[in-house]
Amino acid sequence: MEKQALSPREFLKTRRPERFSDTVTEECPVLDRSMLEYHLDTLTNRGQETDFERFARRLASLEICPNLLPQTGPTGGGDSKVDSETYPVADDLALIWYIGCGREAASERWGFAFSAKQDWRPKVRSDIAKIAATARGYSKAFFISNQYIPDRVRAEVEDELRNEHHLDVRILDRTWILDKVFQGKHGAVAIEELKLTTHIRTEVRKGPRDIERESDLDQIENRIKDATQEGCFGYQFVEDCLEAALLARDMERPRTQVDGLFQRAERVADKYGNSHQQLKVAYQQAWTAYWWYEDIESFVELYGRVEKRSKGSRNAYDLELLTNLWFILITVARMSNTVEALANLEERTTPLTAEWQRLSKEEGRLSTALQARSQLLLMQMTMALPSVPDSILEELQEVVRQSEGLVGFPLEPLARVLIESGNVIGCLPAYEEMFETVVNVTSTRKGEVAAAQILVKRGVQQLESKQPYEAIRTFGRALRRLYRHESRHDVVKALYFCGKAIGSTCRLAACLISSVGINSIKLSVAFLMINPPRINVLRTSFYSIQPLGCYCLGQTYVN
Image (cartoon, rainbow, N blue to C red; front, side, top):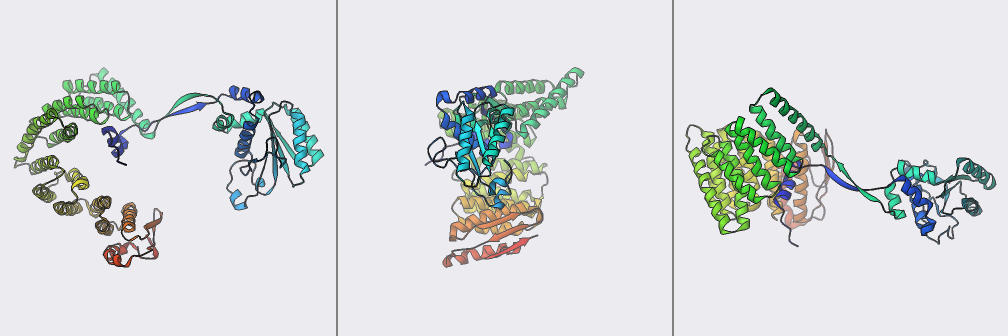
């Protein structure tokens, strides 16, 4: 069965769930006490005696004791003379009970009778007499009725039956049922068993991120009002207007409200903001139109606005924002595959390429020039997909190598793009060479752990591409770099995927991570069903894991 392609919104929500609302809307059936009371009073009119027995048994298991046997014989008591009874439970199991009358029900025998008869007195006398006549050693007898029974009358009948049959008799009436259903929140049980028809109420449960966003939005709106009253229209005023629009978007407020907030930010930026703020507002509008609302027409229109505002800028970040939108544009053009869309893409590509070429010639700004060169190469790589010439990858490799001494060069976003591209072009030899350069430069810039995290991502790609042997080697290299306390969680992740790779190659059991603690990690590795011809292939990778204390057929601790 083919996987259905995700829409832009679904794709981004899968990759960046934190950018969307975490509020949950639930539809819950509403049960009113008066409605349930009326329904209990009129059960016999609808012939629901059996439904009441099932309901009473479930309610008793939730409020009295959980170890109740279901009645499987005829209705009205059946052949066993009881509608339900307790069964013995081991003391260790009863120890963890947290509902009911305590652990006595685990060792004692209790009998239950359920009745929907209006004349309850003869029925309770008859049912308790039958329970006592069985001589099974019942210590308690419960009678649950749908009728309203006054407290004084109930107490008199309980005492009378207790003296007559030497049983601890408990009579539970409609008031008890109503109290337990609503106090114990068992409305769903009543609705299901008594087949109640209820109305639906929509409940909105706000998530922690939305609660924080709502608080931030209120504070920002208050700052905007204060700034307006005081006449403080400056940089922060524009930033607050844009941030308010982004918060409303992330909370998934109605589009009319989000668009209105963006239009307010645009007006404010045009009047009081600088050129970069004006560009940011236009960029976020275009980004939102595509990823949140999947509005291609609005996106294309807003792209032109971003292109106009970024033209001639000496700030590489401004052109990088436009390039982000260009990557979306090329995706849209290829998906539509129309002459008009492809022509529009070419029309947009030419000026963007010219802008990057202009920045790449600024010899006095080495980081900016190198960034411009990298963006040009990424554009060329994207247009060449799915077949990318080795020359482009070799030039990208050289860019990464030259960035090693440039503190101002944004290596991390470039490395992230190159790593992600491994899902498409990871099988090319030139890609592997470029990837090794990214790992080495990242290790020099950010340390061994950052480089190891890149290796783990690459190993996952190789595993998904049905290259388990290469994945095992990559995970082994990553584990050597991760052998330190602060990266213990990355160790667990690497070992998990390494175990999957091992399991897919020689049918060994996966690396089982028994427990993960703050001060130590217990790693339990069991290798079973070894296939001898393949064990040599894995030996090198296993040796690379040995410093972690991960040995065949053994257990150890990493402190």
